[in-house]
Image 1 (spheres, rainbow over the protein chains, first blue to last red):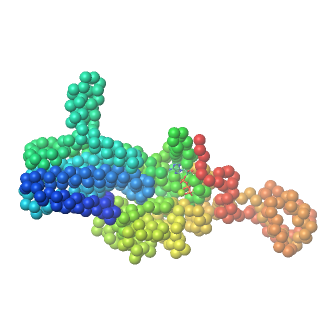
Image 2: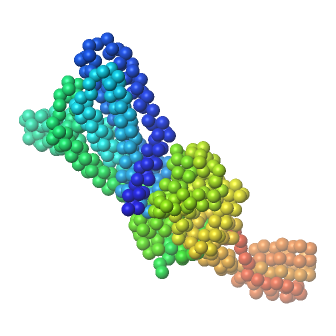
Image 3: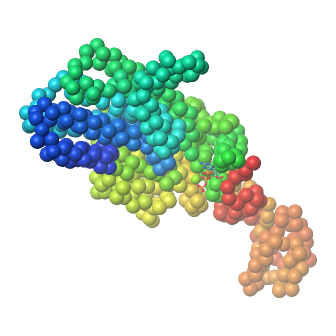
Length: 258
Length: 317
Ligand SMILES: Nc1ncnc2c1ncn2[C@@H]1O[C@H](COP(=O)(O)OP(=O)(O)OP(=O)(O)O)[C@@H](O)[C@H]1O
Ligand SMILES: [Mg+2]
């Protein structure tokens, strides 16, 4: 019970810190882009307007949350170790795994907070312009939330054992590869060399399959996604995240804080 | 009942440097036992391994070999750390939280029940004299204020063992007095206190026992008075009515000779005592006092460090 309270306290205070640290001002950037885009898009027909706003809005939301999430996730633990803020926290009667999960939850709160505000701004803008809000848009936003979850956990898995720079670079690399993973699978299938084919398949299963969480393209053309497919993506994202958390805590458990 | 802290042959080696790894032998078989309810001082030159010892008792680092137990438990168990309040050297609390928020977080982490949070936090915040500044974000604090709020977070869990790494650093006169008062008060409650400090008068005044750590080893342990006496193998003689001519006869046999008009104070090796006495008797001088020399803790410290030939840091290999 008290382990849970400690985790929650770490999460809430982590969110509080990043708000005071002005991390959340990125939403102003989004608002500015949205207003700027809308003034251009007003000339268009209603159908085109909807498509442009959905496409652009989701694209920008996705980029901002991904950059923010990687930045937060890869910096947090290395910075705590370097500044030695960790001394007074990890020496308390909390398990190191609780520390990792608590800090991770704090980051997720921040990322989700930013995501929700941006989603509300986008939907508000569309309501004002009289464009319909479709299910496919909501599904795409859920997909972005799942991507945030996976990337947060991946960045923690790297950051638990390396520096901020290394983990940011690795996590960004994984983000791009993760979006290529469908191609990778096809490539592995067609590869002439069996070794290459095998390696490609291994990479496909090890890398996060971020394509599975990406419903932005469908939202642009208002293509519905079956709930069962979304359900599968949710399960996949949570499963992948849990594995990453296990890796992060296992690495962190062994570390010396000199 | 198990000791508050017990270490056995505790060793820690750091590997540093790239690509050529060097080993820093920070601790080399340290034996230490802090009993429940006692105030224990760690004394030693810079880089002797004091902070390393403290970090090992808090599971911030793991021993390379040997063991450390806190109330009989391994420090990696949260249950062991639940009994400890810790003030690190140059503490770094979360700067974007206010003092009260940080101490509250600490209280939640040590498992203070939520109904008592508010009163417990304000109690310790008042105690360290941070009542008015506690609502300010910590990045606006001075060094001494950070030290005080960090002390508050160490006390908020009502620990049975308080570990303070250079607690008075950065504090003003009143702050240093505060630390001394806190230590004395905690001891009255039966809390064991382990602290290290470079301010020897504080160590001398507060500690039940002291360990002298040099080069990662425990060179000497004991009460302050036993240390400063046992270490002496010199004898001090006070002589009255000694003529000036006597000085020259004494000099070959003594280490130190101070003359205050008719009275002379000499220090000599214990083994030379009889020779010196013989000289004095032959000269018909009057010996009014003969006693084993007492060093101050500071003199003892300097002497031990010089003997070890290791003024700063620890051995490398
Ligand atoms: N992170 C580290 N990496 C490598 N060596 C280290 C590290 N931290 C400490 N050391 C080495 O370990 C030895 C002991 O350091 P420690 O911090 O325990 O000393 P100390 O007794 O607390 O000294 P001080 O009085 O200066 O605080 C030193 O020789 C130091 O060089
Ligand atoms: Mg130190």
